[in-house]
Length: 543
Image (tube, rainbow, N blue to C red):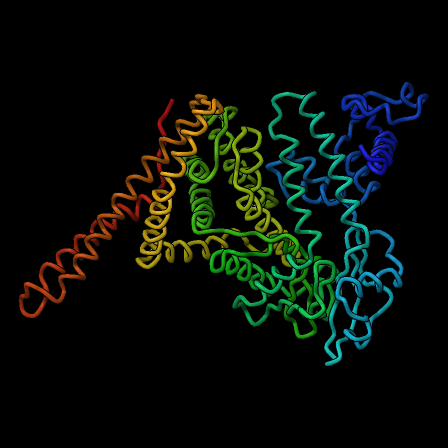
């Protein structure tokens, strides 16, 4: 371990001790990093408020630890709910870097003098956090912009912290067996997350992509100014106004504007802002809403769109079996997963929500609870499905802030019904068939290479084989479902191609190509079972 890592881990241990987390120091074998006397005086008891103490430690350590806490705060599939709730309270407000240092960082990153890029540049930042700080500026065309600048040295600091987190993760795994989620997996995911967080070009592309999407005239997304944007500097339009969180009596019409925007982003474009809380929405003077902070975005393909629609539909019908089928279709059970217990959890969650008379139960919170239950049962849910749930939770919380009496569930259900109808259209089914056919072709094309790799592993003695009933269930379900769909898709495709080919050749009856009409009609009938298999999803064997 390098000197700077030893210095940092000593700091980590001191902060843990300060926040009454001596038991953690002991369990992880880190007490050697403490002064000799403190090793014996520290408390080894589990604190009553473990999540609170850990959150305070992360705040004091700053940097990567704050970002890790923020990531875990939106990932109930990775940590227990009480930690998610506490980590959402993390404060990321640190003293700003001096302007002279920031000026040098901008000029080095852009390769230009600051005065050649900006007509004016305010020395005092309007925001300062552990990773970056934000300044107002003006371009030579008199356009007002904001400039986000990474704090100098932040990348090296994060790399050091990630090395320490890997050490901690490995010791946790060796000390505690059968954990619901691997700590190393959490660190891996955090490392991928920080690579994006520390590359402002990534955020700039997110902003630009959402900026180009068609939207309501009442929604504004800033444009990126690329000549003054780099990996360490992001320049985009300044949005004048107040954060929604600072508006005492917001216009109630904002609710539908926000819901419609999120639904459009998710189901029309498959790329969405996953954190639409009141602090990330600007109320402009003309009553339009500006969206900011695109560090957390979600991607959703056609299958995950169907998962969202299926979940909303199944939940509205209180159908625990349908919810489980939807999750099984897109998630992955492990050897720890007890499907009957998971189904019972789902039933309890839905019933608790429906029977709540206080008016405080939130539909999206209930969906969030589903993901938490999946984690407890060792059921792996795709990351973007979790972000989909996170986006809905944030949006519902924002709507509740604007208008506590608004019926989020009814309005969302109406929207979901329209989207479901669109997904059941002939055009949507045709597109799905073409996607499945392409996927089948790609799979078939890869079979020879995969077979060769398998033979090489067997010959080299590196081939491992294990049996897992839950895996066989999933494989069987997928094979049955995919083969049925693929067979129908191939037959339908062949009929359509043959019918199209026979249009010019007849035979004709009253000018109509009979065989072509028969073929197309038969193809249409075959689309019906294919359509219902797509919507309904596979059923699972009992026992």
